[in-house]
Amino acid sequence: MAEDLCSVPLTIPLRGSIRTNFHELPIQIEFVNGDMLAVQFLTNRADLRLTFISATDKTGKSLDHQSGNWSQWHFWRSLEMPAAGEVIEATFAIHTNLPFTCFVQPHPKKAK
Image (cartoon, rainbow, N blue to C red):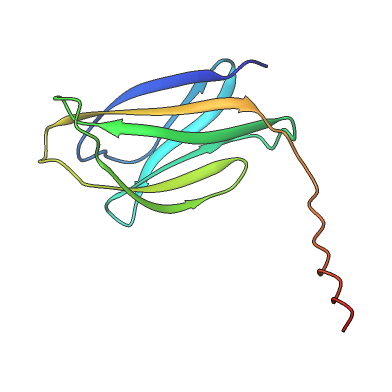
């Protein structure tokens, strides 16, 4: 699957959660802890990943505080919250999950 960007306008404050479909995939969008945008797949398909891209205000200014947590199927992202009634645009990507394995081996000690 090629990367697909999804953008959604959200009026602040968001009252409850939104359940919808993007590219025929069930998604839930809400805010947690007051200022964290939380988006998650409502499926656990091993071949897909959900990634935060941006959140902007009406002028295009980034609201991203660059902190949060994430996994393959969800993210929470801390945002600078605009005033009540303002609309932000949240953008995320639904894309192919590329699993990999990383092995760490100690450096061999140099002979003395």
